Structures are given as structure tokens and as C-alpha cells.
Image 1 (tube, rainbow, N blue to C red):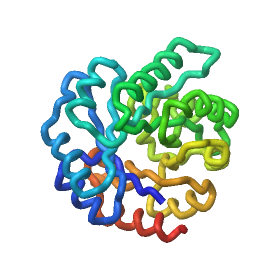
Image 2: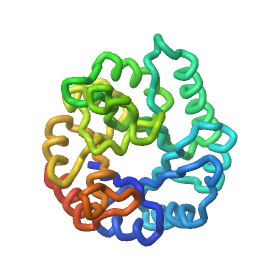
Image 3: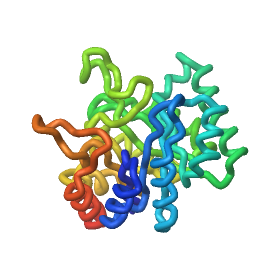
Length: 248
């Protein structure tokens, strides 16, 4: 069972979560302008030196800048998490993202690729669409990660927390659809979307994924109980790992 934790941006925090049992350590490149970050580079090197897996999300998809990012950081995994359009509505965007991954695969064969597959909230998922999108990206991906796609029923604007990208909602996706994806996929599927120490065991038993991922629900919270970005709660990370390992 892969245990992946995201928003680890410093070597010290990487060392801490790896000591807690995390084996995929995820970081984020926040901007195409300020993509070169020496501390983030040190974080990736620290993870790899420890024998664990570094995963890097770029919040942009410009090929030229992505090449610079990959040349500089050399992560084990590059993780793409753009919201995928419905094929009949925006074939051009879908084709561009497929071509991007295909190019990265050809140019960087030593770097694996993870693709987030958006799934709606429980009772709001379009299973047929999820499986269709996964089928499109399966040949150019090494991992899928399920993540929660918010809808107009859950947010007035229907927007994600990071515009244009899926993730960090703190809400669970539809586990029945995630289970179907696991059953149909030829590549490993990591379950994400609102996973916490309290529900990860149930998620594993319901979906049977190759791994689990947490971000929001293992972050520290402020005085009002809101998660603090890029700041992990060591106790909750430790509990998450223990619950995930104990589900097997």
C-alpha cells in the first residue's frame, strides 16, 4: 500500500514525514514564473537520498518550462492534475494534454507520470466519463490518482480551490466510481480526495487501491479549524500512515 502525502516543500518536513512511514513525498511547483526553488530542489534530493519516491506537481502545463523544471528537479514522478474536459466539448485541450504527456514520456523515460482523474462527490459522479478519460490517458501514464471534482451543487461557482486543477478540496470523491476505475485500470490507482486518518481505512476497504494520498486532512489547522496550506500536522500524518497500513 503506497502512502503518499502532499505539500511537502522543505527537506526538514520531508525527513519528518518519511520518518512517519510516508513513501511517496509530494511537492508542488506553484508558478511557471518562480519555478526554480533551491529549497524545493533540496527537498527532492533529500527524498531520493532516503530511498523514497519524490512526486512533483506543476501548476502549469507549458512544455518549455516543464522541460526546465524536470531538468532541474529530476523527480521520480511528475504529477499532472489539470481538470480534464469532456471529450465531446473540448477535444483540443484533451489532445494537447495527451500530447504533452507523450512528449514528456519520450524525452524523460526515467521519470514516471501520474495523472489525476477527476471524480465527482458521492452521488454526483459520472462513472462513464471517468472511465472514458482514464482510457485516454492510460497509455501515457504510470499511475492514476482519483481526486474530487466539485460541482455547482457543492460550490456556487463550481470552481475548484485551485482554478483549472483538481484537488485539495478536503472532500471525498465517489468511492464506487473509484472502485470501478481500480477494477478497469491496467496501471496502479491511488485513492485521494478528502482522505484522513478517520476515513482512510474505510476508503481502502471500499476501493482496494494500490495506494492512498492525503493533503488537506493531514495539514495543521488555524484557530478557526481551517487547514493551513503547506504545513503538515505530524500527529495526523502518523495516524494516517498507521490507519492505511492497518487496513490491509
